[in-house]
Amino acid sequence: MNGLIALDWGTTSLRAYWLDEAGEIRETRARPWGTRHLPDGGFDAALAGITAGWPRLPRLACGMVGSRQGWLEVPYLELPADTARLGGVVRSLRAADGLDVHIVPGLRNRQGPDVMRGEETQLLGALALRPALIPDSTWILPGTHSKWARVRHGTVADFCTVMTGELFALLRQHSILCAGSGEAAADPDAFARGVVAVRDSGSAGAFSRLFSARALMLDGALAPDAVPEYLSGLLIGEELRSCLAMNRFRHDAPLQLIGDAALCARYRLAAARFDLDLAEPLVDVAARGLWQIACDIGLARAGSSRAPKETSSC
Image (cartoon, rainbow, N blue to C red; front, side):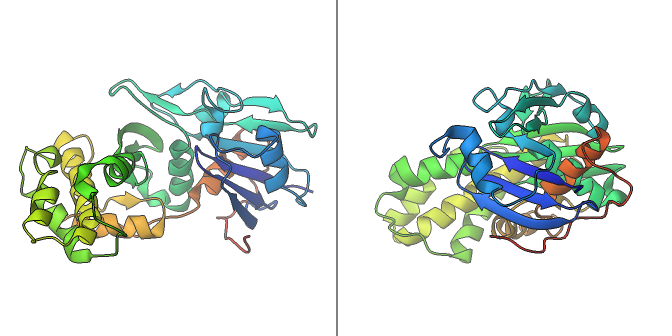
């Protein structure tokens, strides 16, 4: 049987795709078995558990599984990078079941300095789905460590990391700003208020506005339960403000999104306050990127490849 087991293996979660001989998704599974939250038995047990009942096919993984804290460290590849260059430095290990696991490297950007693992595969998969964007495009990948990336001539040419998600979690859980806020509820007005506060701060940015969350709450101008939404608006707004100020990423064309639909929706709401156009997000593009790399290195056949379409999940 031909096909591929594609693994998007991050810090907090593991997502596996069974791809058939045409590169289409037969089944998708997700487990909370990131590199920091493995089940008893470690990486081998996680791999066996998430692929139970699937055929024995070549396996290609991307993400933090290739980090220093992962299963096998795969050195970063310097920019610029495309699927061919990524495939040329894939490393492999022998799992307990006797089959190899091949791991894609991450990317290093000396300009930051900056690094990414997993997002490079998502970007290349997204380009396969949107070939019109190959010549020149800017991408946003929201998350714990959001990435902004520039693609030129089919290669990842530049990127930067913004720790928006992690900063929000720290402020939400450990800061006085959210003391007494209780359970956060969706509040579009509070979110938009935070975005506008940062937008109108000029070059001062979000750090000059963070304590306003506390002051507004004490003055009764912001409900305690709305503080997290306000902070979310501040931080996502700051990500947009600061990345636009860099002048490294073009925004005269729609910015492209990859990631969770709900989180991307928040970015689209914030972007509207900056008069930016963000496209509808692409999801599960890691599977397409892994398929492209697998074809480049001979783990899969490219002849009958089509864009993966998810057919089932569990």
